[in-house]
Image (cartoon, rainbow, N blue to C red; front, side):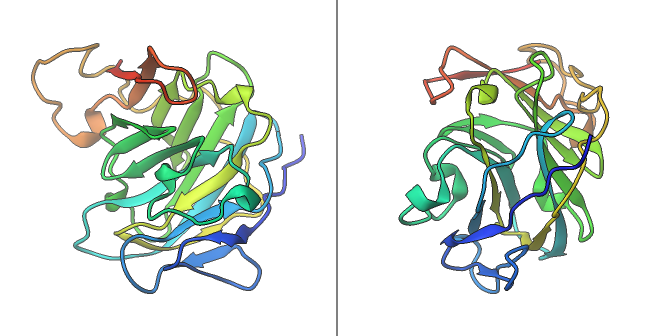
Length: 230
């Protein structure tokens, strides 16, 4: 099918330390390390595979702990009077990244993916699959799945907007006008390497740690969920 066009970032829903280009597709944080969230000006359009968008990391800063936060929100930008210091604090928002975190409507879970290791030129994509059983939110880096979240029930939201937090080690990103999700299967590298609930030996490297997180015991609206590394 045809690729959906992703609308630019909203100039009205933009962190205090973020500067957008005139066309709204380039987001730059010239100062500070936070207050740099951006929300898409229109919901993601469905396309083959699901709702998807992609950014390119244009510039990074060495020595910072934490990096890009990326995901989706069901809160329209016009309903956001003031963007909080970090995007995950917005209501009905689902963001992966920062210092190895997954925020499901404000409830924090852990992941081994560290976006502060991203280099300039990296393509980071977010997919909300159209079919159940493929995960609810999948993050890709250069076409490879790095994080998969199950149990967030994002398909129940009619409108989901792109969210990007240009945080810490990530200084500038550009939003792609069109992008296709990578072909399935969408499984992070060595999924299940550490075993379910295992307290055994540490994985040999972060890339070998499990990156599939299932949310149990909480609603999609942020109940006190429990994360299980599968």
